[in-house]
Length: 130
Length: 130
DNA sequence: CTAAACCTTGCCGCCGACGTCAAGGCAACC
DNA sequence: GGTTGCCTTGACGTCGGCGGCAAGGTTTAG
Image 1 (cartoon, rainbow over the protein chains, first blue to last red):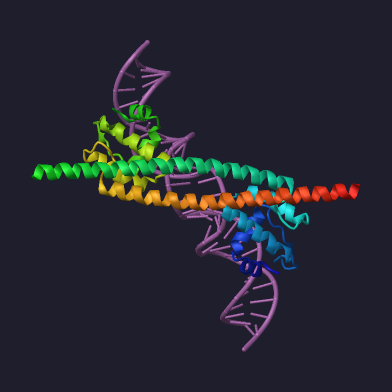
Image 2: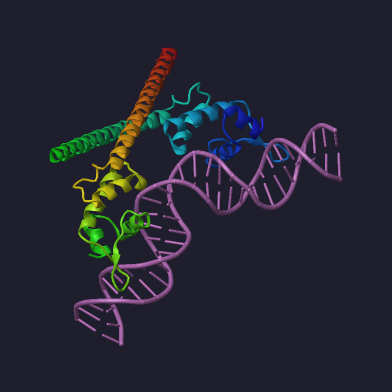
């Protein structure tokens, strides 16, 4: 399979596949004329990459998962390095959730106070109008 | 007050203050030699900008708050435009919290399954060793 | 007089996952 | 042989909030 077909079947672009390759995540063979040739297994790899990217992983974080898949495992998650990255990412997400919760809290209060202030001002204005 | 003093008192850099100015958030007078001159009120404005940036606002979102402060209000939050931005940002944060919660959930499951798979494999290996 | 410490404008670098040309080679069909 | 459609490498653009440097003018202290 050549790059165009893989791109279409993976739901992405040829540019993206070349980008992954330049970062060592995919390594296709080359045909006589220099075209990239991928085998079926690479489709699975690209799907794995895309899924992890969608969850917020960076390409560097994804590398162990790809290696794990290439090692013949049914899932990219089961190798020690992958598990380590998963743990770290979970901790990062928990951390981010905490901070974002605090931000939400502050925004909520800030909004409530602003609205309260507006109503108060409105009342005073009406009282002056009396 | 010149730019260096304002930067120090606001806990930021001169580069940052010039950047804010280039985006219309601060507009100092100029002295005869071309130096930027700020009055005391600008310190408050810069603090407002920094506080909102820290919460995740972009410079464009912050503009109404600065205008509100300049209009003489004790808080930058109380003007209609500011309230609108606050509402929108709160909604965005809520949205992001939802998605991040889903991501956390997925990561948690993925990690749990990976560990379960590893233990299972480990058991099988020991059984073979028996 | 000179060094130090301010200030000015302007422009490139950064991060990350690509998009978007540009300029050209290869393959297949009419 | 010309057109179409694939492929190649290379290099610049994107977004945002600055950092950092260059090359110069100003002011103050010694």
